[in-house]
Image (cartoon, rainbow, N blue to C red; front, side, top):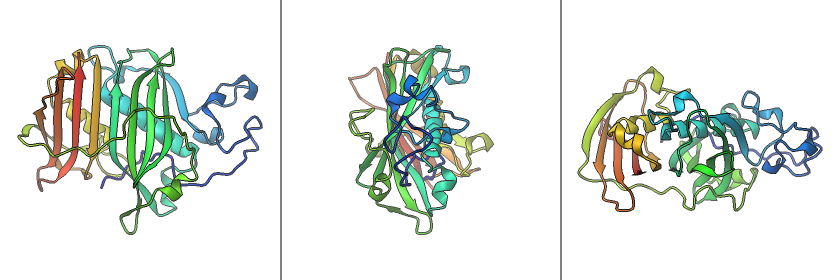
Length: 303
């Protein structure tokens, strides 16, 4: 299983009132109250201090698409979008009082299992966007967290959903997420995607595209390859012109087993037949030493 620092903002029952936010009467600050004149402009998501405001139903930050987020087409990449989502989720977890250290004190950890993202439009360099993230209930053993990137007209350019397992650290076994979810914003009806990420089938006829050794810049705080790095490895496995020309993309990934520093991963791929798009590929990251699958992913492109 792959434990990550990007936990989805779950696992604590929050207080019913917040004395510092007199304009808010519920346990969570609704997203409509952000930047509200009635609140004196005090409800600002602050990445440097996520707990500066009360617990939020939805975390949102407005910021520009930066140079490191684009490719030669001058537009947002899929890994750039995943970086936005990662940071928003971390901030919301801190805001809700369930950051990495908070969660560790409960003897639990978050395991990211699946994620799907649909990029309907690729925001351009320096374009101002609003990145949002929010918890959205549970589906069987999975806790769900959604994301989107919205433009100045409040239209979602990118939408995503992730599935997480809550694991008992000592027993290293998943626990039911429902008791945890009871202490979080419900966000009923607020769905970024019309589907929940599914398990990806093992594909045949895979060919080796490349191999990657997990080095210093691949490793995150938890001592293994960061989930966003896998997206970059996958992007590097196909013709860059296909990515640069793409107007829309869909990306699905299953995180199966963590990759530690020094391990070598063979990046396998195969083209898929899918008449609904201009190009489709399946990928598997396979540990060279054991043959164990670290991840499976599928990428669909529209020109």
